[in-house]
Image (cartoon, rainbow, N blue to C red; front, side):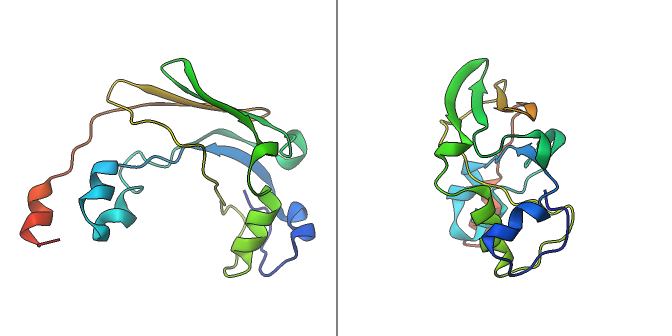
Length: 154
């Protein structure tokens, strides 16, 4: 989470602009994403998507360069890694985003996680990050009315 306004800053200056870290669960409705190219932008924007939390840990509370990350489905570990294994450090990602847009206090810059298999209604997804906590999300049913897209010839 960004703590102060930044734009076009060198990576070395990014740490001073980060207020803290939270967990963000990147949910995608693949039925909508696969329906047609025009719907792809909405596949991550349904009600209850993009959950975050359970709280924000300040930057000095989290060893973000080496924090352990675990993703579980129904209690079983699907992936376990560390921020040290990410392709790019958070400071580089934030500097990149700030190179083309102004980041304001409270803004989030999120990163992807390793691919997960499809989930179904009734599943419980958990994302745990060392120093932050565990974010738990139950999966409920959501369907896409394909007739609408067909009527618009999308």
